[in-house]
Length: 338
Image (tube, rainbow, N blue to C red; front, side, top):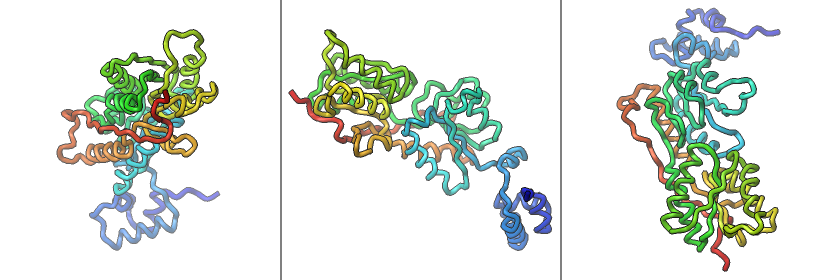
């Protein structure tokens, strides 16, 4: 079995010291062109891969960023990751993504894993235990509306309360008056629900909030099914539904079709996040767009400034950076048929 080459092997092959190899790998300008060429040739000959963890243990940067999300099943983060990738592309940083629930059966918190790997920075895009956040010392940026703060970490988010208002406004302008909201736990869902309630009351419409056990398609399907099957209910069946994320909106559509209801002829449905799921032709979901790609770019730029120690990058006095959402109208909503 072939031995994995080490930095000492590279130094021996190039005829230089280990510390000089480290300087070359960090692209230091203190190395002569001749020595740099010799080290890079040795790296190529030996097929040597630098250890980012070893760099962290040595006190140098690992050029790695940790990203914590809530759930891989909810595709909202895919667009945000694209924005993050754009921001870090020129700096040679790698991105590692961890799902809060992925290794829960092993009692592994992703923040603890990233802390042990000595990542240079963290994008917090999921709900995590406060104790884990308090132990994490690397620069951190919070992406989206979260229930927990990370000290003075900057917050980059969509104005999700405004987004909830926007969803109701769109449906009400189509003539709908019986508009239900399928919500769930979590700070983001709560903000979107708050926007729904504000706009409903502003228009003197009776709110109807159905809370699912999770922010998933299946949970939303269960929550809305209770309304579609309720016999003799005093509340009229909604003609429109606002779900606080796109997978939940798909669950609403599925429950409606199970009951013989057509979307949008019998029921208009609005989701949130404008995730890749919403654009699928078979779903064509009207969705509130919080511009996650731009949020990802902004989070990446801000985190890079904190890591590099750029002037004015201190986060202690930063107010949350809120991006105004907008509606993306597709064929899951239509004017009320009287």
